Image 1 (tube, rainbow, N blue to C red):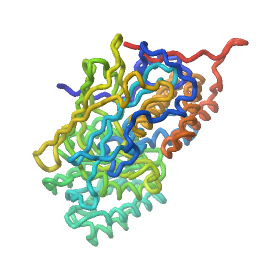
Image 2: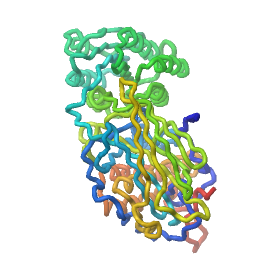
Image 3: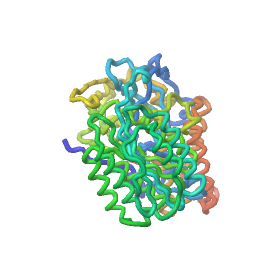
Image 4: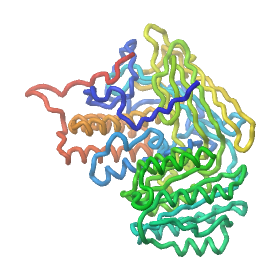
Length: 541
């Protein structure tokens, strides 16, 4: 089976023709349902038929390697501007949400959950079905042996890094040393107009490494190609079999010296990635090439960080050598087999997937420990590292009666540094009899899929508003966010949640920016007319 890379960093299907004044869950429409949404469902959605262990996770979350940051979208809003639809992807957005899954009870290092949720959607009340594909682990992290690191730290020391930014980088690198082990090999590369190999393949406590970090200073241009190539070459020269051979690349600017063509820089990185070398990219401030840094990290299944606050650098370096570089699984695939009564319409929160004949397949290069241990764990590294989730969108087939058995999920992965594979299968089931599903208040198997339902609505609402604004319809964009704000605020009354509260802040900021740019706060109507009622955004296929 060919796995096609689907990216949600593009306008959503059919958005250009939408005239929806409330948020929508993609498709999520079943003509077989006539349930009505009374405006309270989002706030009062409860668990119906769910597990008593919902929300009682005793393990650690598991996240995907890859582009995982929501910072660019937020920074644009904080600057008083309007983000484009390409500044937000589902994987990055979901990763900034911590979902507390049921207790991991499988015998494997990674436990799979397929959690069912169903509610009338937030526009018309017609049937909306989601499945949360979550993963966690019962591993005791204190007993987990991290593989050795062969790490090249490639640091931009161009003139724009002078002052606070370079000081935070030095502090962050010094803090990172505390997370290193005697088996690790560390190299330090700095680059401005040219690259310089400052320290080559030493241990984390080597005096020359500490002295080199302390001496980092900013001056000159930005030769991204030379710095990145030098980092990959030193990792290649000291390759350790069974280790994490990786480059961590930090920059605050655009390529100004040497080879500046993005395609050539990406091609060079892709060649090293194909040889098994990882890459994490860290963009600092607001003037770096976010598209380039994101694309580079995606070549090598690495993490991408957009750090508008240079102080956050201190945490990221430490995270990279502790939780994020501990692989739990590699060469991961998840097959989604859906029964005859339903069809798989969409997959969100992952990069590589394939949908055909109502079922699908997902490929993930690697799974890593998520940094956050709970919803309220956000003091140090912000919301990054929540672990996120994958969300499936299902439709009930026309003319088919609902069945309690919905389908199956099949997880297949390789244990890192071995040739051994693990298989796991879980059933997707409605937690109540199909005729007992509560479309008005919602039927959710677990609190985590309820939060996932809200996350997906917010993500789509952001995408719809950004797309409308890009098309010049500022008032339409504001109207989408107005309904979104009301429903999210209502949900939070019954279900307080730090991540969703923070999302709500950015919904409101987005609305403010739209008004400042000229949006009317209500759609124009003829005298005596009410605003147009919500319409179904994605009609049934």
